[in-house]
Length: 139
Ligand code: IDP
Ligand code: MG
Image (cartoon, rainbow, N blue to C red; front, side, top):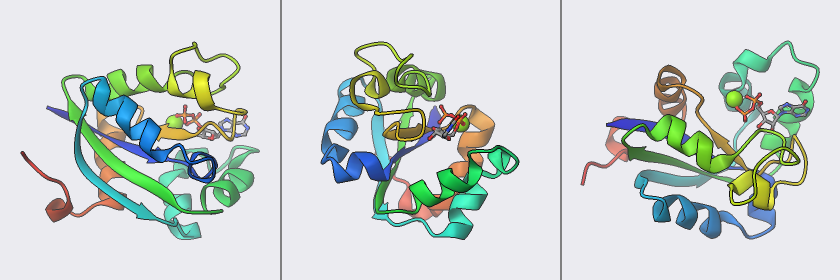
């Protein structure tokens, strides 16, 4: 069974959307197996977004993601990685379909309310950055 890391980003937290976003994903059949609230520090943010280190938006992205608390969660399900990406919608909310989380709630390409792992391999790496084995439940 696949697992994927989801982050409810600071913009969504500020707007009181954490519960709505988690509930939508549960409602679409993804199983919540880990969840915590935290504020990412710079080191964790730079590790999490390491593939974007050389992008022009990297500095702003690290500032944004560390600007306030987030909810980190692990969802599990068959093809959970691609299924969650589909539920999230395109990176740019302006291009994301209605009915997707970013299409319905995202404000712009940076403040797009949710992160989801983009492959099984990155999901494994990302989950390890946020959760210990004992924090992930099997039920
Ligand atoms: P993803 O979150 O859909 O996987 P990525 O390309 O991996 O998209 O980018 C990571 C995050 O960086 C995005 O979710 C968004 O918050 C931010 N981002 C991506 N592209 C841009 C951009 O062109 N300008 C500003 N921020 C961006
Ligand atoms: Mg990505």
